[in-house]
Image (cartoon, rainbow, N blue to C red; front, side, top):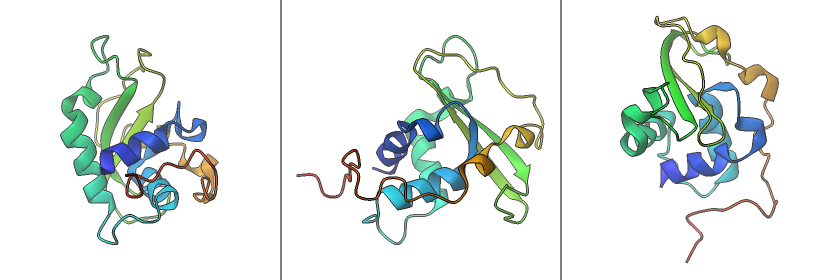
Length: 137
């Protein structure tokens, strides 16, 4: 279910075609799906994404036609969270290939663009495109 929430959020243009942290997606999911259980956290989201897409997200070659990519780094994220492992995700249209960031634990952190989104996570409040999986029949 958490993976489906992430996919729904990634359909919004503001979360596409840029490297964003797991924290940004986590906050966006919480805003778009306010009825999610209080136990939902960034770790559960990352685990759900890994279980559903796994190593396909780590593949920056022609064989990954999903348009979804990820990279792991270690450092301080754009939100000022202390040093931790940071998952960065890049979502684009299916079939589009993204150039893999350079290897290294900190190398992709400079590509993160979370700061251009500001803190406006309640992007879906009251809009018709909000689909809450917990409210479906």
